[in-house]
Length: 74
Image (cartoon, rainbow, N blue to C red; front, side):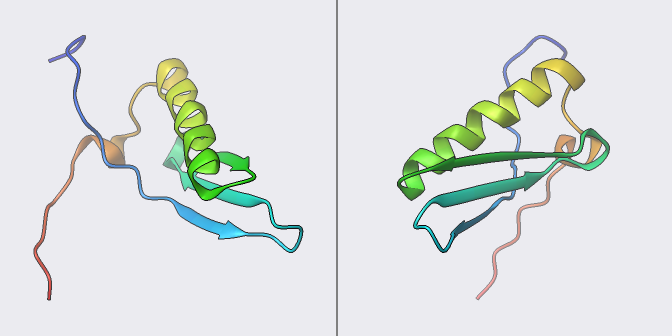
């Protein structure tokens, strides 16, 4: 399956700091974390997306992101 596009699910947190800047963070296991920020939540997430992509391009998909379990909860 190597070389073929696939979707990985990357959990992240999003919060606004005391200066009004939106900050997004994703933990990527052994690869560390990735951060994004911006004046809006959407821009912070877009910045985070670029940072996560750079980590994946350099280190590959972290093991814990290679497998997902979809659950339906109430």
